[in-house]
Image (cartoon, rainbow, N blue to C red; front, side, top):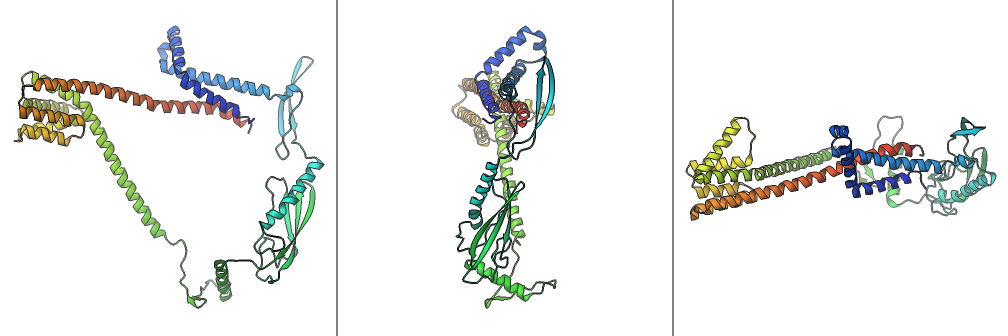
Length: 442
């Protein structure tokens, strides 16, 4: 089993216990704060609960590490395992007790060496795999594509060097020359397989034919040959042919589309800018609506008090506006709900009828509460104000209840948002504890 698997299982078990037994940690924290007054004075129950969670995780990890260390202590059973072939030399920190006295000893242990049979097996595997690696699906009797001459073989600790007896036909890089006769030419590839101090040779006989190219490759090669034959390498300028196979040729550099890329980048930047602007406006609008919903219960309660005291709705709106403006003059904060009430009072003072002013209030305000409130006020003005006090009291009661529900929802959302940071803190603590132990075995 991998040395880090116990830690992963421990972390998974701890997370399960953390989710299931959070109440246990809180109960333990309450017990400690109750019986340790000094602790209660300097740390909250939540802080003590988190400390208990961290201590519990450390105890679990410590127990797993102690069990793993004792289980892997082969020295107590009279032997030490060597590193496998090719790995670095290991140093075993041992303690030997003789005649009741303990002595510390650092013992350097070389990696295991291969036996003769294992070395022969490595060479046999290399000789069996090399032909397929070289030919890449071709037959040795018909090679018409470049071959691969690997210097290493995956999974085998050796190196390979290559010799070709016809470099004019098949060169040292496995490329086929352009002067191969149509009938094919036999080529012998010699592989020198080197493993430690031993070298073995393997010959691979192939028959090389002219390289098979598709129409596009043949065309491009003929163009390159035409360019090379028409130019002098001592000149600083390379002339490109104006015609190819009798057809006019237009030359351009590939990748010369920087302008198009800049245009696309500009379009993307503009799109991102517009989206961010719209998104920011939506966020601001949502925040304004939330503030208006929070203002609504206070506005309705003030209207109930003022109307119950004998004021008309018009006068009550004017009184609420005046109180709000005095609050602003004294350094108070801007409240969107009161701003709308102030606009309605201003309209009524400048010739707009009450019914129209209340209708405008419902049209300007997005929250449902204000639209309903404006409708009630408009109907009251139309039908007469005999039941206005009772309507306002009922609306004030409903607004307070709605505010309580909204407060509970916001509290639940806050608790949910705090859960993720707590889990991340737990993961960080677990990583801090686990990484040093895991690195010791990697």
